[in-house]
Length: 99
Image (tube, rainbow, N blue to C red; front, side, top):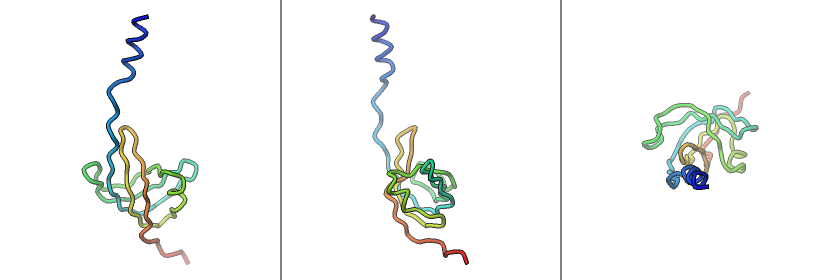
């Protein structure tokens, strides 16, 4: 009985650290509606990440619905290890429509 309680408590671990928030500016290169992921080419994100291109989950669904390929955005990246996602999206401009 004691062993079971010890194993259960060990799984609880330390309290989760609060989420960190960073400002992000970038361009939407691709969208995946099935996973609500946007591939974003972005500049440096605070002390968390150097400039690169990678997919980000966008939350909530209403934020993802705003996006179009070619949009230039300003947003917030929320980091709560091991997860991270984009929210608070403001579309700053869009690529010219193809002719």
